[in-house]
Length: 284
Image 1: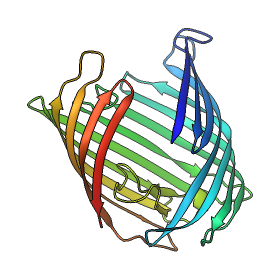
Image 2: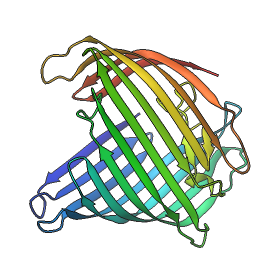
Image 3: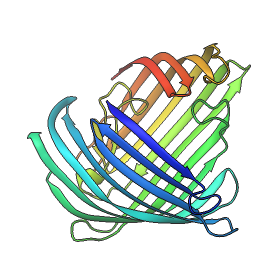
């Protein structure tokens, strides 16, 4: 459980610019601020940002929790990019942060980690969805490709991250969706805090949060939503009954996780407070 706060200052320093600050407290502690600055009357922008994170992380083996670690990050970076339309944006990114990964309780095969981590990437987003939560139709593509740069604690490694989602509606009340996710270090070894994870709601829902950790992961899901109630105007899109199927895998040079699959069913309400979901999942 956490309490999340967001402060947005629009047109800060000029028309079209924005200062956004996020604060999260509870299970984890996080502070992040970023400033979007449009460069003159052009479609180019600059976006510096700073942030800190302090979060407990659980490690698992054979579906049993074996340890708890503390992950701490502090750093920042900037994006320089161009907005081509209301649907498409491309940016060059640079990140530098100090990362600490220490054992709190239990025993595991992971090793403590402390030092600077630097990454650079090209980030492309394409989004034709018409709603932020449950969109009746539209395509979302989020692609990032770059390098984990060589530092005193990690060697240079390529990174690729790709997320897609496609939704469409049939006869107003029936919504279908397909989503994919592929993250990879191209089978190169990296420290545990820099690896990708699977597990948790809509990321292999029948598994614990971040139960599977690896240098390479993929996830695919397909779902169906049936609108069963309409909320009053201004209170959201409606209430849906949903069923979905998920399949995913995570592996590295040292370990390989067997293919995991699950199915889920429940109720979804798209409200002004976000998406509220009550569901159950069964998997292998």
